[in-house]
Amino acid sequence: MTQLNQTTRALLAQVRALDHMSSADKARIRGGLAQKIRMSVAAGAAVTLGTGVAEAMRSSVLGNLSLWSPVATKVIAAVAITTAVSIGTVRVTQSRHEAVIQPHEVKPSHGGKATRAAAAPAVGNIGVPTAQPSTETLVPVEGSTPTPTVPAPTKGSTSAAKSVSSSENEAVNAPLNPSAVSAPNRATEEDRASASDGLLAEISAVRQARAALRNGNAQRALQIIDSIQRSGTFGTFDQESVLIRVQAYCGLGNRAAAHDIASRFLAQYPESPLAAKMREGCAFDHEAAHTRTLPN
Amino acid sequence: MLGQAACDSSDVSARPDDLQAAAVSFANLYDAHADFVWRNARRLGARPESLDDIVQDVFMVVHRKLHELNSRESLRAWLFSILVRTIQNHRRSLRRKDPHVRSGESTLDPAYVADAPQLSPHAMAERSDAVRLVLQALQDLDADKREVFILSELEEMSVPEISEALSVNTHTIQSRVRAARKQFEQALEKHRARDEWRLR
Image (cartoon, rainbow over all chains, first blue to last red; front, side):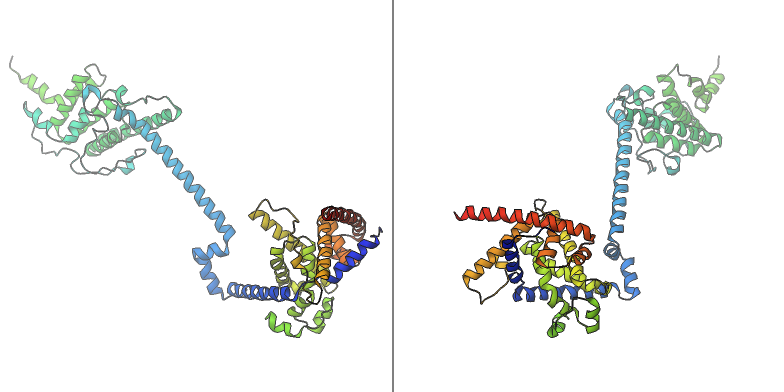
């Protein structure tokens, strides 16, 4: 084995003889060590206390954090990520919804009338969802429909019908041209997706309203139409919704309202494929009868 | 606890079975081996400001694991293995706090040389120079060679004992000792030359 030279060996021997811990260092370190051991023993005793204390600590949030810090860290991280994703989803949903509503609010309505958003009737507290409309969230509200005690239609009943309900007028005054309210201006993927969602909601609402009418529940049909119009989702089936509204008023016996709405619809869209159906309803029964009874 | 038991600090055998037979307390073990841990911590490159913590941490591990000590094991070898791991942990901790801390960097302060009030100032200076020179040369060695050199040349441990302390086979220890001696001589020569140049 290679040997160290003599000078080096002498140096190492000197260091071996002289390089030692001072008594002051030894005492100081001993004091610190005793303190650390006491703390360690105390901590160990605290950890190994009765199971009741340990269980109590585990059951508390603080205990969980202190005893299971690695697990707690992971759980907190998972919750944080989930929350962040949820917030992001809500934001995206909101932005999609705004993308649909925004053109309605900005674009002037047909014939200089109130915009669709403004046309939302301020009657009752119908639970209109802020995001995707759902019929499950609809709740019946008194006052949103005219009472059946409206006088029987006469020649002068048009003006009376106008004052039946502001919601009716606003609903009728709302733009009926689908192109005015649907079709988002920006052809981005997000807008297209939201438009598709809105269309699906609209189809669903019209189907449910029709089903309600078939089942003789005109009130429910009106609520569905009111709700979906208030959400700003209507566009493609605007004319259809007006027809359902007229039929619903007919079902409720409110011919005056039905007549008023149908008249304005026919004035606005005389060539509409739904015009014939508008005339077939109760809204013009009295006129037909009146025409029939007119003396020659 | 420690101070109370330290009152009867008798000589401690290096063998754990002897320790058990003599019912030597942990405090006695500290008194007998604190110096071994302290000086080798310096030689392994522990920073002066970390020395106290390192020695305490080593004995904390000893306190916790004394019952695990194998009766055939050398106490010094066991202590040295704990010391090496403790210093590594401290360096990692320091690097986390300050990424610019260099591994094995040691501030060589002559004040850390053991107190000996009976020595003359000249002898003190001479001793400080000798210790400083050896510590500087040790820091130039590779980590594995430094450990082997300290145990072999400064602690004068046998090859089997070093092998036990470092968990390395005896052949490797022998080859490392040879390489370490050569490297240490070169490092020493370099530092002496530098000192001579400074004193010119």
